[in-house]
Image 1: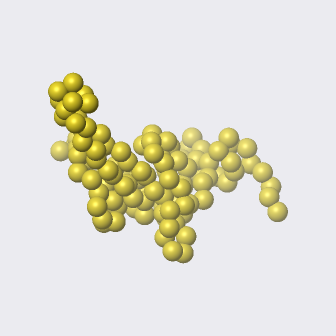
Image 2: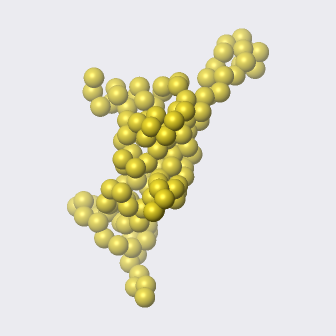
Image 3: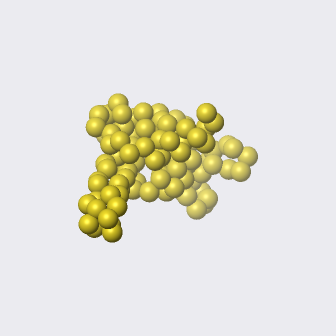
Length: 119
């Protein structure tokens, strides 16, 4: 299978993540940094609520872990926002956002690209 097929399978998998290990495995399958996790819950809507068909609703929370106790530092409810944020973490395992230039190098500064001298 291709990377796109694996990503699609992971994104649409209707199984909830019930352990930290399964949350980290799902995050890895979706391309997040190794120390992140995706907490997935699945709700089944009754057939009466959706015109006779049973429907699954998949809800994900994406957690960026870090710090001494490996606690959640950032959390997103939307994959596109989390993936854009993950691109700002130039060094795997850190939770300090940096601006990544078009050439692939990282420089310090805020997300607007403006550098500031903080003392």
